Image 1 (spheres, one colour):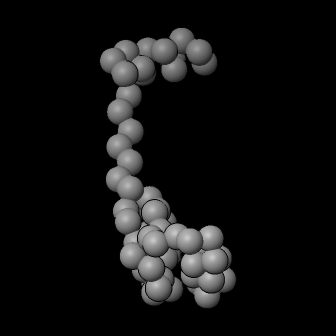
Image 2 (spheres, rainbow, N blue to C red):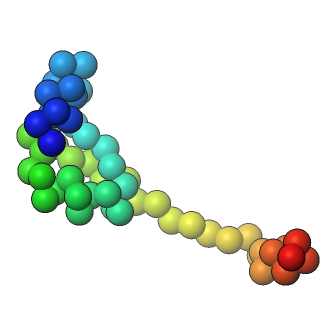
Length: 56
């Protein structure tokens, strides 16, 4: 994490952005900058299951 903090500050970053999945890893390392969490939601289109089954 020291390297990430150092590189972020060297490039002028004021915060870090991560997904919820990777937040656990970064929180455990105590980032020196604010940590913003990007929530990702996967939505399948209607009839996606039929599309997948037809492709098999």
